[in-house]
Structures are given as C-alpha cells and as structure tokens.
Image (spheres, rainbow, N blue to C red):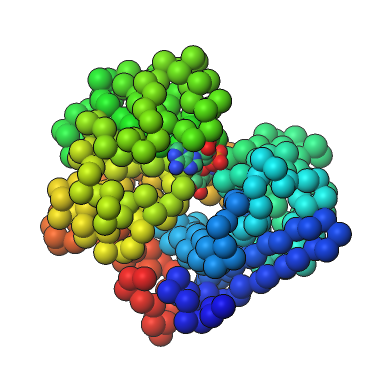
Length: 357
Ligand code: NAD
C-alpha cells in the first residue's frame, strides 16, 4: 500500500501501524502536523471494509484535527488514531489497554480521546496504561472531566443558530426543521438541545435502539436512513460518518443549510464548490464540531473549565459569521475560506501545503 502518494496524504509527519498479538489489537496512529503543539485527536473504532479504508480515514481525520485546532485558536497539532474492528463485537479490555500502551509509546506527541465507537469507559482503560489520554473522569482528579460529546453537541447547536441567522434571517430556532443523521453521543444530545429550543427534529440511526430512545424521550420524527438527506427541512445535520456530501447526495439535498458534527463530511474538496453553487450554506465541519476538542484541551492542560462554553460561543458567534461573510464577498466556498484561515495560523511560511486534497 502506498502512503506518500496516497490521495489523502498531505504532509503528514508520522503514520504508525501497530499490532498487539496478545490482545489482537490492530491500530494506526496518524500525526499530521505539530507546528502549534502536540497532536490531540480522538480514537475511532470501526469495522473498515479494508485496511486501505482505515489508512484513508486516519489520514483524513488527523489532517482535519490540525485545521480544527488552528481555527479554534488552540496551540495544538493534529492527530488521530483508528482501531480496526467492530466496536460492538471486537472490543475487549485487553485491546483498549494495548491501545493505551501504543499511545504511551509516543510519549505525549499524540494525546487521545473519544471518537466514533470509543466511549469514556474505553478511555479509562487506556488511561490505566498512559497519562496521554483525556476526555474521561479520572478517579484521582477533583475537577469534572468526562466525555466531551455534550460540548461538541453544544457547539453544533450554536453553529446551527448562527447559520439560521445568516441564511434564513431568523433569530430563533423555534419551528426550524432539522434532519439529523446519526443519534450517537453527539447526535442525541444535539436532538435534545434542538427540541428544547422548539425546533422540529427529524432523525435516523442505523442502530434502531438509538432511534427508538430518541422517539420516546425527545419526540423526534423517524426517517429511513437512506432518506434522511432528502428531507424538506431547513438544516441537514450529518452526525454519523464522513463523505456524506458527494456528487450523488448534494443534488438531492433540499435543505438550504448543512451543519453537523461528522468529521470530513465532504467526500472531495470540490464538493464544497458544489454546495456553494447549489446555494447551500455549508458550515465547515471542523469549525462547527470543535467544541469537544476545546473541552478536552481545557481538561488536559488543567485550564479553567468555566471558559469552555465562552470559547465555543466565540467560535460560533465570531468565527463562523466571518467565514460566511468572507465566502459571500469572495464567492468562495465556506470550506475553502475556513481552510485559508486555519492555514494562516498553523502553516510555517515555507511549507507547500496543497490548497485542496
Ligand atoms: P457515535 O459512535 O456515538 O455515534 C454515531 C452514530 O451514527 C451511531 O449511533 C451509529 O449507529 C450512527 N450511524 C453510523 N452510520 C450511520 C448512517 N449511515 N445512517 C445513520 N446513522 C448512522 O459517534 P459520535 O461521537 O456521536 O460522533 C458522531 C460524528 O461526529 C463522527 O463523525 C465523529 O467523528 C464526529 N465528532 C464527534 C465528536 C465527539 O465529541 N464525540 C467531536 C467531533 C466530531
């Protein structure tokens, strides 16, 4: 398998493959860029169709983390890890601890937290082997830690408010219709915040228990998985996996706004232009979903956690409108404006970063 010529390879500093024979762990860590600081990014466990897919995912995810930290004003680099396997079937305490040892071997160059398929309990198991994890409630620390997903959801909620204000000229989410794809750690909490604000939430999840719970507890309107992006709503909110915005799905979108937590929502960077040409306001994924990163960063460095929401509010209330206005003025997709702003922060002047990948 080629790496340096891989389409998702973009000046990554390190790619580490690891197998632990005793537990059966197979994992990959990617460190994209550490110009601003150590690399912080979650660990994902997923049943990838092939090793090639796992490599592509970790390369793309770690790159996004560099951009996310930069646009969020954090002095952090970008990294991510993936464990190959089905989180519902293949997860064992031994594998989580082996993952902790792998993270520990990097001695703080990469710090991990939750992502898809990995929860707070898994991070606690990794923490028994390494101090280089965050986003969990440590027994020996008095301040509250924990899963950052609620803060990610809060950031997405704030981002939706700003997008609705800009695009629809509405100051309230009451009556605004939102279609959520994925009711996991972030999507469920987002649905709770939205219904609490009076929005009408349509939702789906391939895991039927999640959907049933959201119908029962929050009154969301269920939609078949393959239909969710085609709903006649104000906001389509992808909160599951990446690459959902592509040449096939974009022409089918009816929502004037796309704003969700999923990482790497654009299948190709050209899809940002496709959305703009269709008159759809795309809220760049790594800007709107940075709330969790901000939270775990504050946890990890021991900063005052009361400032986390203020930090997220600034990103939503100042940076997002700036991106929307610049995109309009320059007739440039919001995704490209965000990339430019992020690169201005993390790039060293001589680095020849690709404009798009
Ligand atoms: P999760 O694993 O808790 O939830 C994902 C949910 O999506 C699951 O319930 C799964 O069944 C569902 N799903 C998967 N494919 C689907 C499909 N095709 N249609 C409908 N549902 C589908 O993960 P999460 O932590 O909630 O993260 C969701 C997304 O947000 C991911 O892309 C993740 O990378 C991103 N994200 C999460 C955080 C965080 O703090 N958790 C932070 C930033 C970005």
